[in-house]
Image (cartoon, rainbow, N blue to C red):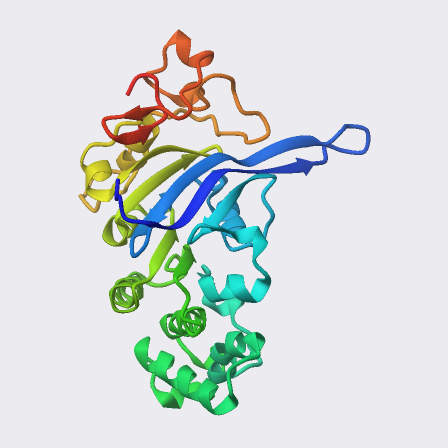
Length: 318
């Protein structure tokens, strides 16, 4: 793990929701994020992967301050995120969302969309605002002529470049990317990933990169955290994790990647047909009902917080 000073620290953060079960049944708790901790060094990229419903996007919303944590805390540069007002938080952390068409106001021009964070801060003169917008559009590969267009007049890749420009115009330190390429064609995905990597080097950005696409995460992340039922079950440097995954769930995820080789078909990852239920988390190791390696002790002993060989691996058998 990187020993550089942390740009962002997440400490034992939890988020619980209450879901109704009908008119006569009481609500039951759903632990979407259940005790997640990590420290992300400045200038690095933490990729977070896992199945749909594992808590990735809920974690992102808490880090952005869009959703309060039930417990735990997030610190940026050593300061609690919940002690900052919205403007200060926005200057430090910005999001890039999955679908650029739904995250951009269709009635606004590109210039108006990108300048909105500056206008919300209220301390940037109009002339300087336009200058910064044009500078950022050029940096993300959009011409000045694009500034007068509306989102419907742009391609998917151009819209995502606008979303990136809007996120960076305040010059934040941290960018939370929640599936930023999944709505794009494969060829455009590569362009956006290369742009994000280039901007990170040029501007010294720190990324939290959430994705279900393992190939994308392997390309851009310096470290990877694997989430299952609200917890990080394995975390290691990218090369280490992809070369030798230790947790059975991580191995199953890597085995699930489709191959272009003819005749291979859909891989069988050995997880059975059951699906994890965040409203009914099993005792012991939460992965044991689907684990092909599970032993009797896995049903009662919790592997939370175990470190194996210098990396986090929440598995009794790793």
